[in-house]
Image 1 (tube, rainbow, N blue to C red):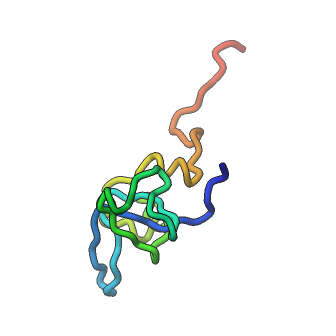
Image 2: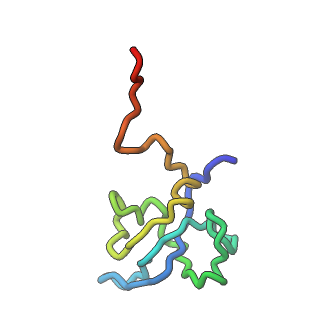
Length: 98
């Protein structure tokens, strides 16, 4: 299955920025609008997540996102479903035998 190119955000909390827009806080999950579950399989209703269809997934990444001020955790399974690769690790494997 191919990773979706864009996804909206579902989060455990919300806050209002100085401009008056609702922004996600707490743990964030990737969500495709029109469905009732996140990309990792959580039901939005049963998990009591809040939907943010106006916020894109790339905007809540703590390293580079502009809307990540109150984000405490990013779901690893949703990040993998959005295409974060396994080889994006700080270490590198080397061949011990020349």
